[in-house]
Image (cartoon, rainbow, N blue to C red):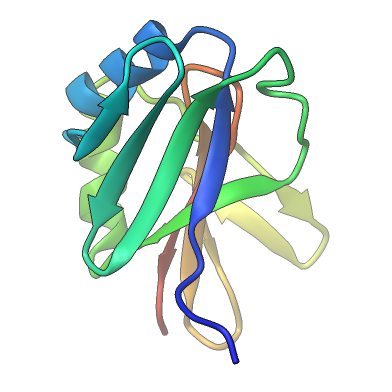
Length: 124
């Protein structure tokens, strides 16, 4: 019934967002409409960044990346200036920016240059 799902992320300043995704996350768009939008492919997934005045207004996770070594990715992104969120859900709290669930799955969250919350997840 459904095909692949793709995230769409708003950017108040598209040029700034393109720089963040290139310089910090190491991603290049495969399609670019200057001043309007950019499409990225990561593995078999895609996401779109588009110019919008509503960037950063969503308080929930807007997009997530699966990773195989969350500590390594968090460390590498920290070296590039990314600040990770500290969360406290009572029994579950982030430790050094990483949340570990009872299943062994691990997750971390940060904000991109436009205030969108981006998640990282490692299966347990």
